[in-house]
Structures are given as structure tokens and as C-alpha cells.
Amino acid sequence: MPDQPPLAALVTGGSRGIGRAIAVALGRAGFHVAVNYHLSREAAERVVSEVQAAGKHQAIRALAVQADISQRSDRERLVDQTVAAFGGIDLLVNNAGVAPTERVDLLEMSEESYDRVLGTNLRGTVFLTQLVAQRMLSQEPDSQRSDRCIINIGSVSAFAASVERGQYCISKAGLSMMTQLFAARLAGHGIRVYEIRPGIISTDMTHAVREKYDRLMQEQGIVPLRRWGEPEDIARLVLVLAKGELAYSTGEVINVDGGFHLRRL
Image 1 (cartoon, one colour):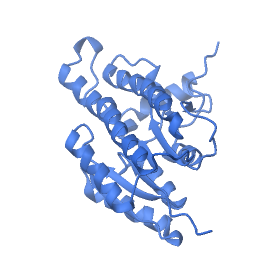
Image 2 (cartoon, rainbow, N blue to C red; image 1 turned 90 degrees about the vertical axis):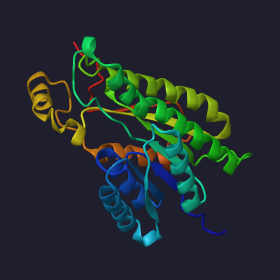
Image 3 (cartoon, helix red, strand yellow; image 1 turned 180 degrees about the vertical axis):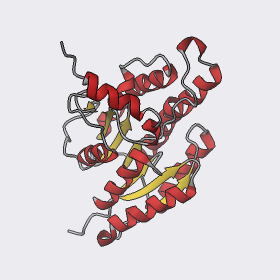
Image 4 (cartoon, one colour; image 1 turned 30 degrees about the vertical axis):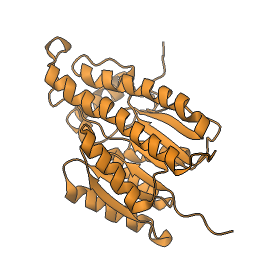
């Protein structure tokens, strides 16, 4: 029986932080990887090199694809270029997300800021997932394959209210319902859908508030494991899901937050 070709993954927001860690881990695990980025081609190309180096013994291919997923034409081009490079898409990791450019009280939040955050984090992600799901179905219309998967990178902000970045919280709460909807719609086609819900992760996005979270961890113990999460903590779980280790599961929310979600007295 001939060896199966490598599966093809598309990772949005793959040029840094959690997305970078996921892309490199997938390359190491034998996936071809499309590294989507918005602004920094140089950073994305570095990740491409890392992916190829990680998968060098398996002839893994990777490419960087610029696209602003809040824009329909960019989403279409992103999917088309990925399919042209790899012949299809077996795994979509919806990691791209933006935070408000400025933290302001909920009563002062602007419509422009709301639209910007929701445009990427929710609307763009929903319609990119729709596009990829349609492509997955067209690849194997009658298949019950278990190796196709969509993973949404959510946030504890889906349930933990931060009144100075309400638009971000709303976007992540919406992403959680989006996971349920696509899981229900695609289950009959063997496409599994999950939400990974990170907690306080050490990335560029959290750098500006590191001192605050250090204090909350050490003085108030908001994270029972009393440490920051690392992007690799998320990447390891992506591999578990992408490899089908939870093949009889879909629509799950899996917390990777050091126990932040626990309710304690």
C-alpha cells in the first residue's frame, strides 16, 4: 500500500506567537503548512524556514501567504493559493486575531474599534471557515475520512469579562458558538471542529500587560498552575487534535489556561 501524502494545513496569523508555534509543530509532525500573515512578510518567511527545517526529513513544504482575513477577496486568494500549492486543505487553524489598539472603558468603545476587532476575529474567521469547509467537501464529497479538522483558537475572554476591551470578549464569545455551529454542520461529513481556549499566554499581545498579570498570578493566584502559558502549550494540543487522537469527539472546548477556568471558593 503506497504511503499517504502529507496532509495540508492552513494556519492563519501564523507569522508570530501562537500561530508560529503551531505552524512549526505541524511541520515537525509531517504536515505541509501555509503560513498566513497580514503585515510582516519577513516574519512569515522566517516561520516558513522553521517549518521546512522542522520537517526536513519528510520533505515538508511550506509557503507564506499574505491575506487580511477580514477582506473577502483576501480570504478567497488565501484558500486558492493554499490549494494550488498543496492540492487541498485538510486542516484549518483559525488563529488570526487582533486586540483593540487602545483599551478603553466599555462606555467609550467606538464603533470603528468594534468593527475592526469583530471583522477579523469573528466575521473574517466565520467566512474563511465557510470557504475552507466548502473546499474540504469538494475534495472528498462522499468520504467519511477522519483526518479533516478545523481548530479555532479562542480565549478565556469568551467568559471572563474585561470591560476595557469588550469588543475582544464579544468576538471570542462569538467564536465559541461558531465552533458549535460548524461542528454540528460538518460532523456528518467526518470533519471535526474544536475550540482551544488559551489562558494567559506569553505573546506580543500580552507583553504590554505582563507586569499586571505577573502580579495577579503571584498575589491572587488567578492561574492555579502559577505560570504563564507558552505558545508551545497550544501547539501541542493542536497536534493531538489534528492527528485524530480524539477522533470520536467534535465541538469540544478544551481549556489550556493553567486552571484559570476553575471556580474556587
